[in-house]
Amino acid sequence: MRVAIISDIHGNLPALEAVLAEIRRLGVDFVACTGDIVGYGPWVVECVQMVRDRCRYVVKGNHDDGLIYVVNNFESADVLEDDFNPEATEALKFAALRFGRSDLQWLNDLPEMVVCSELSMSIAHGSFSPPYLHEYVLTVEAAKYQLLRIDTVFGVMGHSHLVGVFIIDLARAGSGAHIFDAGERFLVNAGSVGQPRDGNPQASFVIINALSDGRHKVELRRVDYDIDVCAMKIVHEGLPGWNAFRLKLGM
Image (tube, rainbow, N blue to C red):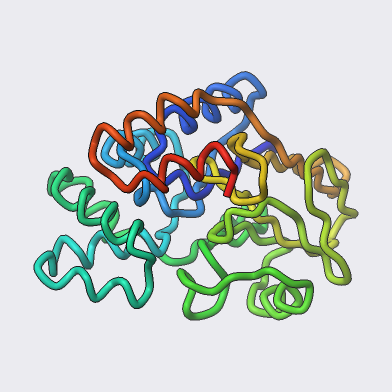
């Protein structure tokens, strides 16, 4: 079985379209999304609808959760600045005015963690223990702790916008393919479709191939998209300029 993992789209439709086109070219059995469909970017509704259409598994991200809070508490939304930077808060307020009831209900009902039993794969946004949406897994020690929280062979996540793979005693970052023996446990961070923060502005995603001999092949992939189109749309919609500028820097 061959699956694609996407994460942290953040309203960047050109990046999402480019990633899904590449996934379609490569061929997979299904796509899973580890959350943060909204936030920062301008095409939040379009991205939610595309994820609803294309992804078999979706979990809630902290920006998705933040959007629901803003919708229900618009006048006091600035309290979110305790959890989000000002640019993110402004983007959530922008998004809150654009969604219909169906998409908002879908976002609200998303689980914080889900298990794909056929692959023995756990899916969450930030981590596999509370708070699922907000914790960053950035070190080998943190990854070891998270592996103790799940019963599956491997887990996939996002949130940090940093693509990479953790096994029990080291981290493998960057790009390319990694092979794991049958039963070998690991965590994968899919990075970010719409706002990478590892210095590479290309959209990132992951392909996981469950091989017939029980091994797993994990491919950390990148794809180009038209950054200028997204940056200009951000500015045109009156969103913070930093949300556009950082796309070109990959940060």
